[in-house]
Image 1 (tube, rainbow, N blue to C red):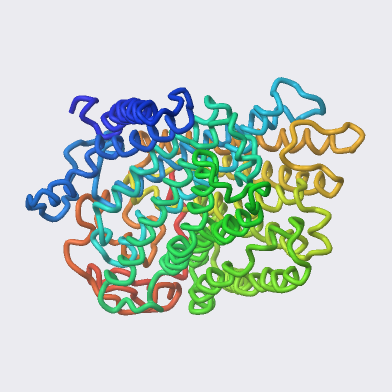
Image 2: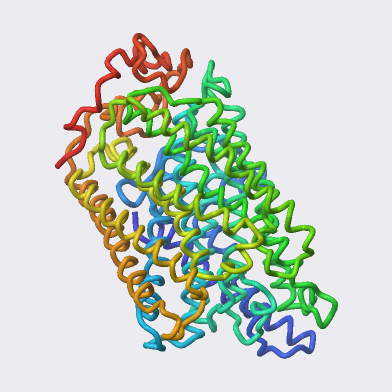
Length: 629
């Protein structure tokens, strides 16, 4: 297939053309209305919106819907691809497995870009004084580091959910394959918009986009910032609706709620948050955009607006959003620990319900981000207690993990190492959380590097380490090959050691008074050594990530051919031929047992393939030759 017929390239071409047409139409309308045609912001926003729609049309993801609108018969979406090899992942596909990998590859690329931004500004912060960045340039990089990372993590969550959920529940695809493809491709113009802000004056208000800073009309990059996040949020909502329908309606016979894999429970809790809260960040960013373009003054105090309204709207989503990243990661931990401990998951029902409890409580804690904003004193107390309450269902998970490993036959393969690293790092994030939830301490440490260290611990332990563990664990299923165990462990130790040094020195800097989001600091503050160590540790973490990427790239081409079910898992996706193409299951199966009864004689989870899921030999550790050295 010629390159211009591939969805990605064709879509980008249409996006450029659509942006130009949208800009010209807007200029013409402004001239007809007697308005100055040289106002760049409305022209750019209109062009970007039309360019995004043109991108979606150019990819071909709308073709079936347009045929349906014309009255043309559209049969069931085909899971077969017209292209092969790597081209499948830059072309429209309706197969949830291909879409999951598309999300995963895009997530890794976006996270690498965000990490590059961090390397640049951490080099600037390695010593006092401005080295090579201007304050505006520094603030733009640190703002994009935050929001691009968040976008990358949302893509990673979608990758795990799309690839694994249908396989785990016995479905052949998602409930709405066309909507699934549409939701993925919507992220590409969004990412282009976010990165374009560097060329359009930058964004210097932090990843939160707080007004009135974000209403600075001289920086039109903010408009692209808000539009990009808006499209990512729309993709998240559409994906969440698809996953809810898939989980509720398409489970295999016999798979009751309390026979579902724990990862599916965590995804269900996550998508409930996405459906009910994501609109709020979209609304808040849209209101700032309307302030900028139409002068609507939602957040302009001089015209009766209220900037605290933005914070309430923003954090009502953005704190539950932490659990959008974290809950799937915690589900991965609970999914892998029984496999590498050869024991049943301790307290399965409590762990399942704890995910739903975290999702529910997460909606009642947003205002702890606003303790220093001038909110009424009497409101601080209930939000302190509600924030502390989140520790209860989270503690349930920790006790489950410890109970699962207790007296187990542990195998320390690379996925297990990342799981254990995730547990320890997330514990650090959890222990550093209560000072932020308690008013007396938060008033002192808010907006310091202590918060930065706490948040990085939460994200590394709750998302990044489990995400990498999941990639390594399901790598044989996705590729039919094994990763390199030695490189896997080298990357793990680099990331673990680097992370601990980074986060702990960030917290110490914060306790010494180092403010976040500043390009320079006073040498008399006494944080020179800590900031240098944070920068060095950041490069060590980055080196670990590069080892991980290198391992994947080499193993895809030269890794040993994987044996069937190398981890001896009970989950149904490991009991079908690899690589999986087209429909997942030629014949439907029935769930006849519990998913995590490792170590129990004559126990089976599914009827797939007759004896599939049997664990008669599951008391032994995972065999050593499972991965190539």
